[in-house]
Structures are given as C-alpha cells and as structure tokens.
View 1: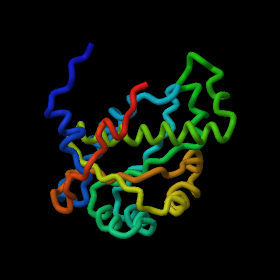
View 2: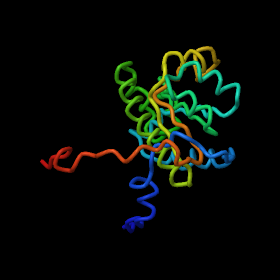
View 3: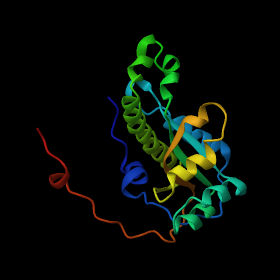
View 4: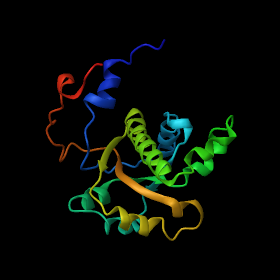
Length: 201
C-alpha cells in the first residue's frame, strides 16, 4: 500500500493550484514538456485506448495561427504563454489498439460502431487532458485551461489539411502551460460540499 502524499504535494496539485491568466517570461524547455507527457501518458484509460493527442504550440507563427480562433481575453494570455497545448482526440484511436492492448487482438472491433468510438474517445481523451494538467503541476509548471475557442476553426487550421493520422484529430480543449504569474489570478471560487455533490448508495 502506498502512503498518502504529503500536504505540500496535495497543495501543489489541487488546493493551492490556480488557473493562470498571465505568465512569467521564463523559458520552459522542450525537455520539460516531454517529461510532462511521459508522466501523463501513464494515467489509466479504458482498455488502454489512449485516444488523446496533444499539439504543443510554441512558435510565434503557430501562436498567430491559433490566435485567429480564440475568443476575447484568451488571445493575449495565449500569446504570452510559453506553450499552448491543443488537447485533441484521435477519432480513429482504435487503429492503435493492437499496439496498446496486444493481449486481446480483437479489441479494435470493440469500437467498430462510430458512436461508441466517439463516446469512448471523448471521455478518455478528456481524462488524459486532466492527467496532462496534473503532470505539469507535479513537475512545477502552471496551467491555464480554456474552452473559449472555435473548435471547428482550430481543427481546420491545424488538422484538416495534414497528412496521415492528424486528419482524424478533433480538438477538445486548450491549456496554456508555463510558469504562472500572480497577475490576474481570481479569488478562489466556492466548491460544492460533499453533501451537495455526492451520494452514497
């Protein structure tokens, strides 16, 4: 049995972690971004289907392309962030099932129904997006998740005209990653109590 994590770690991951709207001018190396993914990919998904795909946007050219599809204040905060991740779902994720679930060669056929594949893909891809945020926080980075963007526009801009697997990627949400500034951090908003949000059967 593993021991509970210390309070300082829980604070870093949850209680003290905040959505960041401004960023320090501090470089985040690609090696650290790769480490974030290598940690996040270990999170569980249904039958290890791992449908999430991540486009890490960091160049000025790519940021400018992304900015056209952002809403309101998301433009400035994204331009200032060292990295912005487009968390997407590969709508044909099941093609990787023989590699990811090799002990059951028939697993790919579980997702032969398009609606079942879409449901599993979006559910598990969203999970993986959350794992990515926790991995980033665990490695000392801050996150600014966003849903204020034109998803269809982002898909056309970054995925539709690509060759190969990226044609089947569909954006889910965005997340800025870097070393966050205290500027623009809102006061902690209320959360629902156990009694309001939970039931025991």
